[in-house]
Image (cartoon, rainbow, N blue to C red; front, top):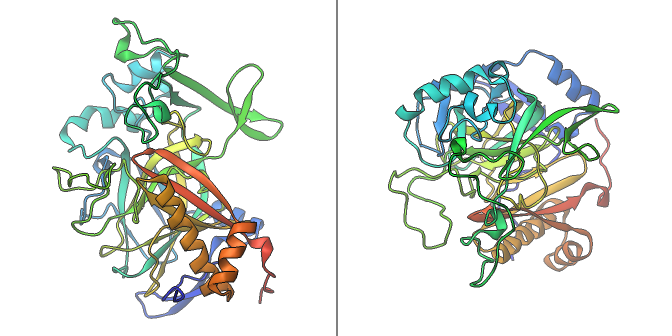
Length: 411
């Protein structure tokens, strides 16, 4: 097997050309110290993109929409998103969240304004996405690095949903077999507003701080530490190439990739590793890259087995770095501890194979191992996590510990 033809070097410096022709160098977030990351978060971002109705897309990745924002490589941008849960159902958000004791004043004005105009939007899928953000000079064959500098809850509450045949217990889940039974979770009564049955079908969790740590108050005795992340981060996909819930799914009638299924473009990866301090790398398929984000979560377990995390409106601070001529096939990421390689497919076994192959190719191209050595190291030292299994295509993340390799001295 030949080594990966063009590899994006992790944790290294990259030179890029600004529009004014001045060569600039920027390091990935994982090369920055914690204090440097805190400093980056404290600065005013170069751009801001709010979740106003005109900047929101309902459930898809349309190609070549007019930009909601245009930035240069190296710029920072804060992006607000609103969760689809409670803001895109059969009742308005004030009524929905009011069933859980949330006051009208606690509901985001962005959510109220979205509700007022949502019927004018074409629906491609379930998520409310903010975008697109264009990165100047990005072209197909490039790679865009997205440094996740900060993520902040916009409200003090989020929602998780449960149903007897939801998530991995659904009849459409690949693991379902005839005769499988669901869970003993009652249905909402016929007169329930919006089908809401608080504490049974829908669970509102407040967040706060305990002993200096941000948590979700699950119960009087259980606090769940927060680990916020954007469930959807993706670029516009390749023209005419669609990812469905099955390998033989027909193209969508809208001609637009749904936000439900993740793919090579990223999208609904629901990967809890993509939190503050992590860096995501995505291949570019369209001019400008065209970045969308949404489906924000305050915390989720690997797998997202009920079909939802704590669905929670967030604001994210990102830095985008363009790598010209650096081509990758699948999304990959890194944080302080790991290089992360995602395999995505409708078949979990296939996703596992893709993730493993990406790990092996990286070890050969970047660490100088042979195929045999790389495959051996992958088997004895690399953890493969099931990041998400409920979105039609499933995501496996191979985590290569950085501690395995000697650390190069910083200049």
